[in-house]
Image (cartoon, rainbow, N blue to C red; front, side, top):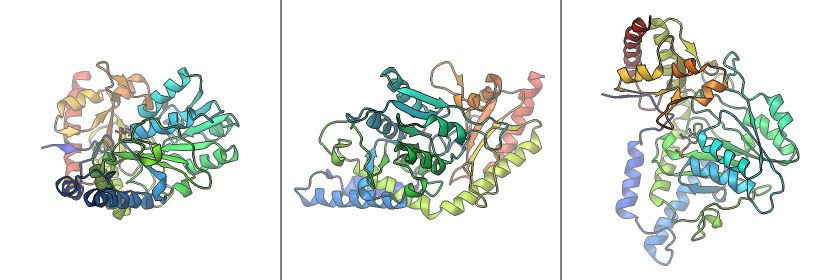
Length: 396
Ligand SMILES: Cc1ncc(COP(=O)(O)O)c(C=O)c1O
């Protein structure tokens, strides 16, 4: 039996999403670009309706959504698309040290191509807003030479929700394009692109119980359209912004997934935050000296939230996260070390909020999801409590 608490990495595909996608594969397999026949026109209509649904759930227009293969591609399109547009004269890009690699790696490439990249630090773990941007610093970093600001909406490791709407005000003052990687937020928090004031927003279906390999980029069209240089050339689909046959099966699945997530966004926020808080309490009853990585949380729903309702990240005393995971193969969580190579590096996010290498290596990330139950949370706390006591006794 597996207890799956790694819902930031990905989520289980919802059965209703699988049913919608199966129906597409079995019965509506024509190319949505084949509008010369009825079968193609039918799929084209379904794709259009699905993208329209996604747009309206984000408070966007149908023609503001570009379908991609996921948030990595969306981030690449946003960054390279803005920076490398032939009319782009500005040379500075402002972002955060705690962004996902799908953003940091394109920034490294742009730096090699001559752009000035400002990677701002975040508030330390001693702050109630750990991982949050310092608004003063961001204000100072944005100027008339800034092409783009890219700040994630919610962090995938410590759940920090950034004040994107505040940042947008400063961007507007200098006519700077604002991108947000909302991979962890879409489907978990209500999203209104106008209220956020963003020009570009990345999302990915597998983070909200949809299929892998499909996502999108919101691209503002009004009052001013964001100018993007396409990164994938070919058949000219999607207004030439992203060529390639539309993934009709994935699009229908993604729309279904977002519809379900939105129907229960409030109730799941409350339920998952309750489970998260309960896990924290139960672990504290079993283990002395735990520390919370990331922002302190409010009672969910009462205040402007500063942490994803389903995120918990804990530093364990004396024991490495990897060792706990090795002893608990039935528990799917993730360690503070991002295994991007054979050599596990401590998480750059945990180091950025001031943890030492050892503290980062002794941390675990828990991501609660739609399918988790109260009894799984109790069982997880029991398992970890027992294994931690055993490993800590060896370390003593
Ligand atoms: C914040 C963030 N950005 C980007 C990605 C990449 O998303 P995808 O797997 O859809 O390319 C992820 C997923 O790991 C993420 O959590």
